[in-house]
Length: 151
Image: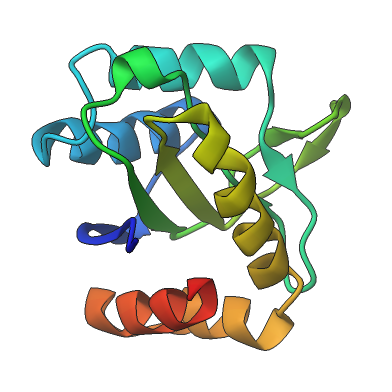
């Protein structure tokens, strides 16, 4: 099952805060029909209560997601931020990280979440891959890289 969607790969996003970055990305999910109209608010709210930033090998990343009732279909998107923004660390909200990549998820079945997160964990340990994603020149390039890494 390929959950990465090319139309949900957004590059060079200018955001002044984590909330702005989350809303920009979440609105793409709504526009693509993947997220319901409640999806952007739900993503922002869940991030406040359950932070998703992780220190990765190359630089920090975040894996924002929310509950299935805000989702129409399972999907994953990638957001490359022009400049890192502050997010709180997953499991340690007192630690502030500065992600440059967001791997946003729309999960319809919570049981699928663990397998997807496992693949993302493998990806974030690959410094070369993360740098290639960040430095990619097109969404097609990111799609090909991430698809291969999640396979």
